[in-house]
Length: 143
Image (cartoon, helix red, strand yellow):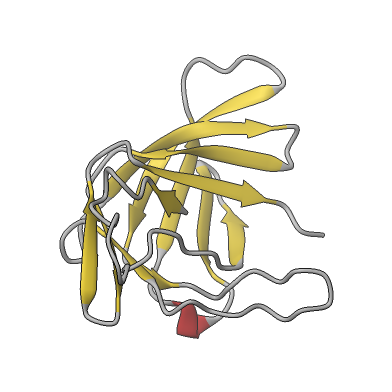
């Protein structure tokens, strides 16, 4: 998940950060999928995805919601282990509100879209509030 640094008010020094990366576990059900952090220490994030209207094969339209918070787990590069940045993303003002999302799934492997609600990034006591539509999400299937 990554927010627009300027739109989120994080164009300063030091920065709170406007990006969080983590591994998620997807669980299907009759109506869609729910993604939660693979590691419980990553937070309470719950992403709910359902098929939305307007699919254009091979793209499946997605709609859904996000709630909770997630702590950055870092990104592994080559043989380097992930290095967390300490940034946290919170959906809505408190993490209890459902923030709408939309996007698309391509070839059952890659999905991306945006959150259409307020998102807050924080680190070391600093916060950056991102207005609706300024934070993008990307999911890549591993394995």
